[in-house]
Length: 413
Image (cartoon, rainbow, N blue to C red):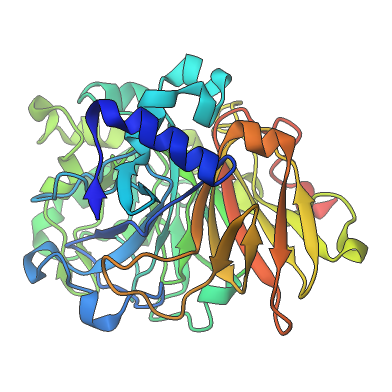
C-alpha cells in the first residue's frame, strides 16, 4: 500500500472525506510493551503477537484514532500513529489533521490545541500492570511532554475471561504517609518493594469503568480495557516487581528530569496526595453506563460510558452505541470521534462495518473509523445488517465536546 506524506496529504484526505462522506476509514494500530505479557483477547492472530520482534515484547495494545506516538524504546518511526486508508493509499491521521485542521476535528479543538489531543486504546494483559502514575501537565512539561489523565471501560464483548488478576489497585490507603512511599523506593532493589501494601484493590466488573486523574497511582488488572485518554504516553512505575518480573528503575524515572532520577523526595511529591488517599476514592472515580435518552423502543441504545471532569475540565468522554438486529439509528454528536466496533456487522454512513474474528498484523479491517465534526453535527446513520446479534460501537470525543454529559456519581440517581 502506498504511503502518502508531505504536501500530498491534504488532497488525499479531502478525497477520502468525499468518498466516505465525512467519515475516514482507519487501519489497525498495534503497540507492544516489553514489560508486560499480552492477554491475547484483542483479536490479533497468535502468530503475530511478537510481530515487532521478541526483543520489543508482545503486542498487548491497539490504539484508536491516535495522533500520539508510543513512548517505547527501540520503537519504529510511526509506532502509535493511526493511518487513514483510501483508494489503495494510506496517510497518518496526524498528517491529515495537520493539513485540514478544523475541517476534521472542529475549529474549537484545532484553534486551542492545533492537533487531535486525545486518543483511546484497548490494552489486554494476562496479569496486572505495575502500580504507576501519569504526570500532570506541569510535571510532564519539564521533560517536553504533556500530562496524561485517562479513563477505563471494560467491554463485555472482550471480557468473557478475566485472565490472571481482574482487580486493580488504585490510590493509597487513607492514613498512608509520604515516608511510607519513600521507604518503598528505598527498597527498590530488595525485591518486591511493597508499594501494594499501601494500596487497595478493587474488583473489576465488565460493563463499568473508572476515571483516573494524573498523579494517582493505579495498577490496572487483567480485563481488556477501553481507555480514552489525553494524547500522551508519560508514566512512572512505582512497583519494583510484578508477578516475579523485575521493573527497571528506568521505568520509574523515564519522564522525570535527569537531575531528579535519584531524588526520592521529588518522586514522592509527584503524587497528588489528596486524591491518592481519598477515603471516598470509589465514589470519586467509579463509572457505570448511563443511557442518553429513552431510545430502546426505536431499536437502539446510546450510553455514556466515560464522563466527568478532571480538575473541573472535561478532557474526553465516550459512549457505547448498541443497534439491534435489522435496525437503524441516526446519531448526531457535537464533535468528532474515533469509533471501534466490538460486536456485529452493518454500516456507518456509506462505509461497511464488521467486527473481525481474528486479525493478521498489517491486515486491513472494517471495524474502525474517524467521524469528522461536520459529519457528526449533520448526523449519520448506523445500520445493523445482521439478523442474529446487536451491532455495538464504542466512540470517544475530544475535550469540551459534551458539557451535557453526566457527572461522576450520576449513575446512582
